[in-house]
Amino acid sequence: MKYKGYIGKFLTVNLDSGIFGEIPLSERQVELFIGGRGLAIELLFGRISTRVRPYDEKNDLLVLTGPAAGTPFPTGSRTAVAAVSPLTQTLSTGYMGGHFAPELKRAGWDGILISGRASKPVTLTIQNGKTELADATDLWGLDTQETQVILEKMLGHDVRTMCIGPAGENLVNYAAIAHEQHLVGRGGLGAILGHKNVKAICVQGSGSVEIAASHALFMDRMREMQRIVQRDPIALRFRQIGTASGIPKKNKIGALPTRNFQGGIFQHAEKYGPGPLKEMIQRFESCGQCPISCSSVIEFEFNGETVISERIEHESHWSLGPLCDIGDLNATLKANDTCDRLGMDTVSAGVSIAFAMEARENGLISDADLGGLDLRWGNATLLDPLLERIARREGVGDLLADGVRAAAAALGNGSSHYAMHVKGLELSAFEPRAFTGMGLNFATASRGADHNRAFTIAAEYYGILGDLDRFSHDGKPEMVKDLQDFSAVIDSIIACMFTIDFSTDVHLFAEGIRLVTGIEMDPTEYYRIGERIMNLERLYNLRQGFSAKEDTLPPRIRLEAVSSAGDQAIPLDISKMMMEYYQLRGWDERGAPTPKRLASLDIDHLSPAGTLDR
Ligand code: SF4
Image (cartoon, rainbow, N blue to C red; front, side):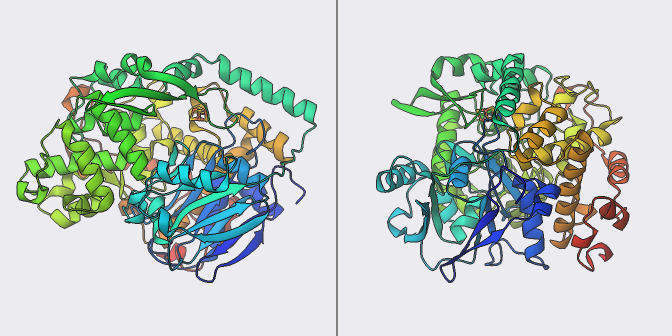
């Protein structure tokens, strides 16, 4: 491998046979796809030519690093995990901070490809050049924090661990993977590890990562990047309050989804603002190589006990509070901590609870089904017990553990109208009727309603990446396409998406990739790589059975107005934006990439016969 930043190989682990191997990484692969999300789609697309079911042994799971992991590239040391999602059936690549990726590189691998299924619970350990699968029967049933503490005691302080909790073991469709206090939350990849009977992956190494540029030049440019990020006023605010200001801000304009997206104003918004959280902070924390340190540890009281946990992020703050009309901040904080320990995505969990509250109100879930739980709007006391039931698939928890799409299919009676998902992934905290670009992104993002695939709010509300009217449809298709392509490369470096808000731009990222790897990179090539990734993900989804029909929004968004967000927040019809978006992408009316577009992106050879003839 002439390019630096890479080790040049992936570890392969066959759980059926217990055999380890390796696959080399080629120069062409990294030129075309960089790393992280790009390599995930390239590797998984090529391995199997037919539809992959999530709970099938053919559903390989990838752990990936980016080329900058282990270098001072700001925020570039994050980890990605990819597999077919049980929630969406699309390929899902998720990310987390922490220190796993640099350690994996030091252990001599760019990533791990896990195939097959172990016959009993195992831990995969990569330590001191030795790789092994150890019996993890004694760890099965432990939560994510307990598991990490025990493995650290067994394997030593320097080992970095990712693991699942009870939700992953019980195949909750939105189970997460935890590492330290970070999680790959969305898409249910914890359930895929659980299905494979892998409780944890532990890694430790002592190697190093080479970079292409001279040490002096590299450090000089990295220090400058760090200065740019640190000087940014938004970055400074992030450090002090994280993403906590989002709730009162959106509430002020009536665009904070409440009561399962029935309204946009929350009466307890100020309680959920930055002030109360700031007072709870005990210390700040950071992901590897991040100059922002936006994480922190907080302390609060709940039910007479002191709880120490991670500061909550905007999405969880919303889904386990305002969305369910719950106005008890400490109960929301505790529920967030409970989700982390059980290993469960807070967004999908909160949206599923809000769905259940509305279904109960409509008489589709009876009190007899609830085993004593009171599912009324605003009832904070139900959060913890219901989350436990979801993670263990008990009673009504079993219904909600499959996500709102499946729950609505089971309940029927019109409940799909308020099942708030796209392609099976529950909507995150942004009201599409008040931010139309986000609506288009939700409908077209390859793994469903993921705001991070194109954080349009930066342009539609914060005025950072342009200044577009949030209700207007003009200019949105182009903005969404560009942001999706831009973000696909950030996800391939595996840098933090928050950097979009911090004065970083494509020039900085292109320069960073060039300095680390030596790959020739300018803004044009950068966007081309992003577009290539988006198109290959599209081909993958087509093979999984998706079509233009699924590029849509929940009926509630399409058919109801959200009056609190103002007169302009009418039901959202994205059909015109969608046509323009397809044209810009070079996709036909079925949403399939044209051969010409694939050829222009150098991936026409990857399109399997038949994919385009659906
Ligand atoms: S900005 Fe926050 S989440 Fe992003 S890498 Fe830094 S510490 Fe981690």
